[in-house]
Structures are given as structure tokens and as C-alpha cells.
Amino acid sequence: MLTRLQRLAGTIAALALLSGPVQADELVVEITRGAEAALPIAVAEFGDDGNELPEDIGAIIRANLLRSGQFDPLPPEEFIDNPTRSDEVRYENWRALGVDNLVIGSGSRSDDGYRVRYELLDVYTGERLLGRSYNVGQDSLRTLAHVISDNIYEELLGRPGAFNTMMAYVAVDGEGDDREYHLVVADADGHDPQSILSSSRPLLSPAWSPDRERLAYVSFEGRRSEIYVQNVRSGERRAIASFEGLNSAPSWSPDGSRLAITLSRDGQTDVYILDVESGQTRRVTDHFGIDTEAVWGPDGEQLYFTSDRGGSPQIYRTDINGDSVERVTYQGNYNASPDISPSGDRLAMVHRTDQGFRIAVQYLDSDRFEVLSDGPQDESPSFAPNGAMVVYATQQNGTGVLGTASLFGSARNIMATEGRTLREPAWSPN
Image (tube, rainbow, N blue to C red; front, side):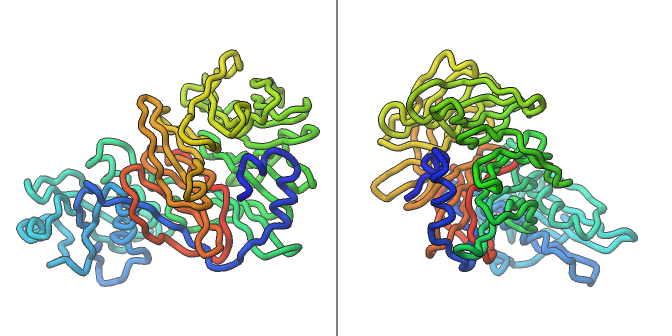
């Protein structure tokens, strides 16, 4: 397997991506979730005024909650009835079905779009935990379903949801000389993918700015690696790192003013900090080994990066001045591609096992280490903004796909399909 560390270590990355086989089969987004100790909940079908809603809001909410791994939604075919208002709810029916909470709602046409209302009910007390009405346009119905899902998640679990967020990834169409690379942004559930850049040369390592307005990424459009920053909405972009040698692995600082990047301009591959506005760079690491893939700690004062300075790829931590470097991972002989959770207490990585390359999480405040995915070719982990899930790239039937793994379980489900190969996912901030 050509690892991300190897792909970013030099211009051999471009040759490997151009010459290796790429399947153009159906692209599958794979969802990994768990039902262990998941909360039993029912989401009723949202009633309407006789005209079918353009979006099935109840189904979107059920899929979101299921994908989180922390809810176990009751299948609609097991419903005894389908209330749309609290005064229609027969709580004994839902208690008999073993659910703790019930979501009901309705939607109807309004003068300028649709009026949608929902309620979250406690089945055992009859208490109304949440309830609200919205007026939205047709194009906003899916977004509203994600907002409602986030509201439910936060009310019942006490932390923000991450459903009304986005994914960025690289999609590849075609084969050989006809291969086309696309930088794509989509909803967090894979819907509404939009290509914001297309190129006949490889694109790598998209990274969201904290304000979700910009993406940094690596492009080989000039037949060498360069780092660009692009406005997601306008498409305006500029090259910000075009130094001789390798320019790779951008990662935004928490305040959005700087990027941690990997450069080889001084003869060895090290981590640098680049000021986005001025273009000035400052070297952080200085070692004959390969130091790459740096990500910022949430306080903006530390960097986690991959290095083979100890003989095999492991993850290290340093302050932003490079004054102190310490090894963080010791489980096994290969750990790379770090991503730090928003709270700073968990580190996701690519971990090599007897089953191949898998996604693992290390809890930094303890010795806990968990393998989340099945392998054998998993890479590029990226945390959800609430730290409860990880998206990663993997393979299914020879096709590049995306998977999401809940930190609360490991069952498997299919989320969506799209006719292309996906790589290099990045989950947006809230």
C-alpha cells in the first residue's frame, strides 16, 4: 500500500497517483456505527397538508441519528401509528415498542415555501423536551432536517451534533491519461456534492479553515506540488506555497491566520508554519528524518505530526517553536496521518495491524487505544467537529470509498452511492 506519508514525501507522489489503477465503479460511502448502549428513539413520518413534501424530513433525521452510533431509531414498519401532534400520541404504544423518546412533526406549504414544525417527546413522562416551527424554502428542507437532528442530539446527549456540517474530499473519474481529479464539497451525509475545482493532475489533502469559508489543498497542476487556498463559495484561489521541492500537508491554525505545512526546500522534509496573509514561513522541526502531516492542537500552541525519525512512522508532538519534541504513539510499529479531536483529548491516526492499515484513536489523557475500522487499506482520518465520529478513506470492491466510524460502536451500514472514486476526506467545522 502506498501510504499518505509516502505520497507526500516527494514528487514520487504524483507519479504514483498517475500510474496506479483507479476504478470507476459505483462509489459507496460506508457508514460505521454501533448500537451498543444506543438510545432507543422513534422518528415518526412528518405529516403534511395532502401534498407530499419534496424531502422526507423524518427519514433524514433517522439516518442522521443512526449514523452517529449513539441512537437506535425504530424502523417505520414497526410503528403502530404515526402521530404528528403531541395530543395525538398514545404513549403506551411507544413504551410497548421500547423507545425512550419520540420525534413527531408536520410540514405544509406556505406563501414563500414550507412551514415545518417538530416536537421531541419523552415517552415515559410525556414531557415535551423540544419543539419549534420554521418557515423555509424548498432548497432548505434538507438543511432544516440536519438542524433538527443537531437539536435532538444535543438535547439528549448534552453535546453539539455535527449533522449540519460538510465534507471535502477528492473524487477521481476515469482511468490512465483520461483521469480527472475533482475537489468536492458535500453535506456531511454525502448529499449534494459540488465540484469546486477540476484538474487532470492530482489534488491532495484538503483542509477546512476554521470559518468554513476556505479550503487549503495540494495541487500538481503545475506538474509539481503547490499549496493553494481557495474560497469555497466564490472559487477565488491563490497559490501560497510554491517553494522548490515538496509543498504539502496544509493544516489551519485555530485562528485561521496560519498554516502548518511540509516543505523540503532546505534539503530535508520538515514542518513549517506559514502566515497566510504575508506568505512568510518559519521552520518548526529540523531533523534528517521525514517530518510531515502536522495538525494543530486546539490551543494553537502545539503541533502533532508524523515522523520516521525513530526508524518507523510514529506521531510526535511539539510546541509551535519546535523547542520540545516528544513521541506520542507507541502502539505497534506504524502510526501516521494524525488528526486531533476538537477537545484535544483524542488523536485519530492510521495504525498498521496484521489486518493491514486501519483507523485507530488514542486517548491522550489515558492509555486507552481503540481500533475503529476493519482495514486493510484505511487512511486519512478526520474528526467530526463534535469529536464523536471520524471520517476516513477506504476501499470496497476495489473502489475508493469514504467511511465514518463512531467512537461509540462498530456496526456497518451503507450511506450513499456516487459513480466515482473518493479519497482524502476532511470534515468541516460547525
